[in-house]
Length: 175
Length: 201
Image 1 (tube, rainbow over the protein chains, first blue to last red):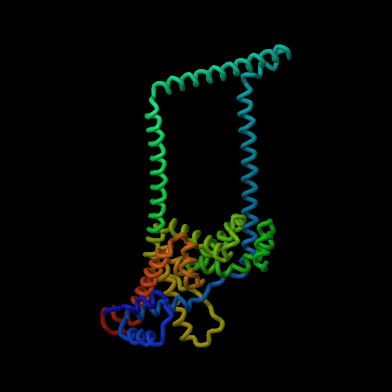
Image 2: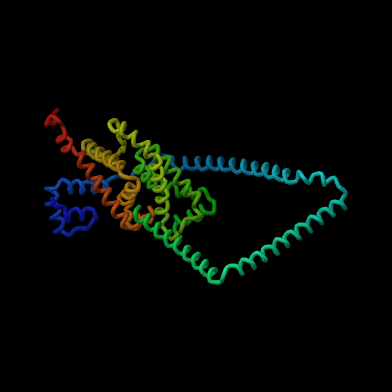
């Protein structure tokens, strides 16, 4: 049996004219499938809303309080764990320097100053090494190769963005 | 500012009383959604409570341009969909065993006068609940939002994060499935399926 357009009317919840309504009723007399569809529509519309048992809001407040207690407990435990780990880590870091605390203050200050000078010199040497490496690299790689690499990088980035968006749209429409 | 917005503002500022008022106001719509999604009052109670808890925790993210009911029902719908997906494989085997001795849904109606009519109505509601349970989780959510909450297709799409055409096709598919279920479970259909050809037997 041809269900069109009656099935579409029922599925689209169309507001029918008197003529269409009459046609539909005639069709429904002879079509069990469309009758079932109309019945499904009516049953769904007539279904009542089910209310929860009395005291739902009170039970929610109790659950909220319990949840808060759990969260507070977790926060406290997290803080305690962090403090223990932090103190342990600090102790572990300071352990090699503890013997120095026994040194006289003037000797300790001299040691700190020499350490700072050493760090400064290291940073400066690293900077010089980096800049000379860059100069060598720049002279070895021609300008067009740099341009090509830049263009490739931009192209790959563009392709990645477009693919990501398309896959996202496809996934959304498939859902 | 209306009363609901005032409650939301107060709740966002940490006033639990204001949120409790929102819970009281929306408990039936949220519970009903969870009940229709999950099919059991105990699970529905737990899911509704959890939905309110999530709403409470994310209240600062609520966009005032959207109706609060839509936002709240969206949280509940997504929670129920996730829950159904998690227990899908377990339910598959359990449902097959439980099908025959399914506990009937009790929906007492104090205003019912005609017991026969009430029995028919209750049976239809039970069938509808079983039919809903046979739908895929997102289809079920779309049907519930459409028929119990009068959501438009656009609102359903926003709530379930789908396209409008996807909502339309899901609603069509779901309603056809419900219709097929009801058709297969009408008394006439059952009579036709009896092996002896007589309703008395």
